[in-house]
Length: 194
Image (tube, rainbow, N blue to C red; front, side, top):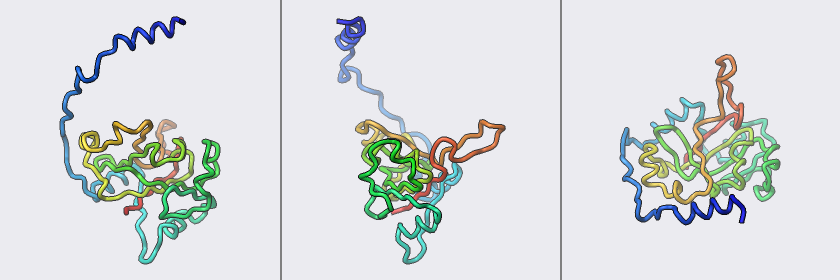
């Protein structure tokens, strides 16, 4: 047995039983407004936007209106057909040519204008980060007020193996204080309410 295995075995043998050490209750703090308007306000502060439908417009139409130069659109939702079947996304490299990724968020957090994605929504984890743009379907019923309420009410925090909260597009202001969007991830994040 290696030293590593000996150490791990000792840790496993001496780890506390979770049932004997319950977590303290989560305190509910802050503004409990889980409304759509609060979510939109905070989403826009962080550079995200709402993709508002025009009368008679489908989601595919709205995506083409928002991203007229997009050639490769990959959708994980039945509401958008896209141009690249999601079944072809097997590796992170497969996402490289994707102009627009379309996914459904598990839930949104109004306080931060954030959406939550996990392995349940993404074919591979990088799908939400390597595409040029992302369109996120979000139900207004899936909005929660803040991180406290999200932790208390959303099972995904305990069940997901991978989870990410996205608040608008990737951004950095490290270089000469200039805000750059899309520096290390998607260049835009648009929410389509369902």
